[in-house]
Image 1 (cartoon, rainbow, N blue to C red):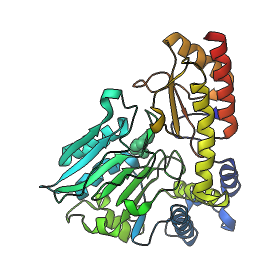
Image 2 (cartoon, rainbow, N blue to C red):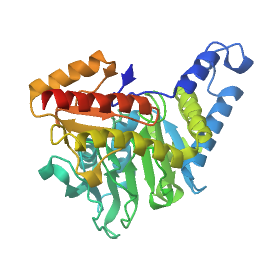
Image 3 (cartoon, rainbow, N blue to C red):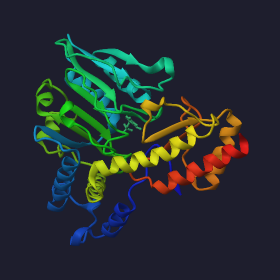
Amino acid sequence: VFNFSAGPSTLPVPVLEKAQAEMMNFRGTGMSLMEMSHRSAPFEEVLHNAEADFRALLGIPDRYKVLFLQGGASTQFATIPMSYLPAGKKARYVITGSWGKKALESAKILGDAEVVWDGKSGNYNDVPNDLALDASDDVAYTHFTSNETIQGVRFSTDPNWGGPLVCDMSSDILSRPVDISKYDLIYAGAQKNMGPAGVAIVVISDEMLAKGPDGLPPMFDYRVHAENDSMYNTPATWGIYICGLVYRHLLDTGGLEAAAERNDRKAKLLYDAIDGSNGFFKGHAVPSARSTMNVTFTLASDDLTKAFLKEAQAKQLDGLKGHRSVGGCRASIYNAFPEEGCQVLADLMRDFASRNG
Ligand code: PLP
């Protein structure tokens, strides 16, 4: 089965095989890692290696902390304004789709959050690659979503906005190189490109970390997690282990430059099928904002969409139904999704269009 689900998503086969081989007896310990204390030497090594490999992949400078947390990306929607949006300052939110709106919802409860760009008029089919935002004393941070999972739009480069920059990278982290030095805080749920659901990763600069207020409940204080090396509470041990295997696999297969090339090639197969269909399939995103992770497209009617999805299912192409806010279809093709699956879908799209166009 080719799993086009938006998440949780496909994991690399070699990672699943290694996890299976180590499941019952973790590296000669006679126990499963799932049963082992998070303070044990084997788990500490897993955590240490996962962090080191993650840092190596993204080229993260020493002046940033890397935290492995729980609560998904959604908890960070609240922890960030709780920590870095003091009274008297405002946060700028750039809204390019559904997840940015959710982040904004939490920020508005906790402080003064201002929308500086909103793609609503185009039903979130574009991103403001050319938006200029200068630093200002009254701005606590600017928040954006590098890839909007539901709409399938992404920023083509790291924005050059002034002031502290915060980014939700849940659906495209590790899909391409990133210039970490442009950011003060990056966060992501693991379940698309990194590992199983249950792990959220936060990369935060020491400068940002120091701005946190006193008096936060410890679980919502990134400093507490940093001081305790992500072990203030019991971490998601198994999930972190799988993330670590994914990082190693990515390093062994050429790092993020190579991952980006694979992802561009995979996405091109689908966008070429859309563009070559004489309008039978319509891409939701404008070409300059097209995501390489979530390819969104519609057909002319609900009946055609249903017929297409039925044929796709018969060919073992699973999870292609689009989100109701966009309609049509969405092919989520994260890092571990095989190129062969994109080819099978592109072939079906051409064949279906020629029979029904
Ligand atoms: N942000 C983006 C871009 C997402 O795609 C998702 C989930 O799909 C989330 C946030 C929410 O993540 P979580 O379910 O880990 O809270």
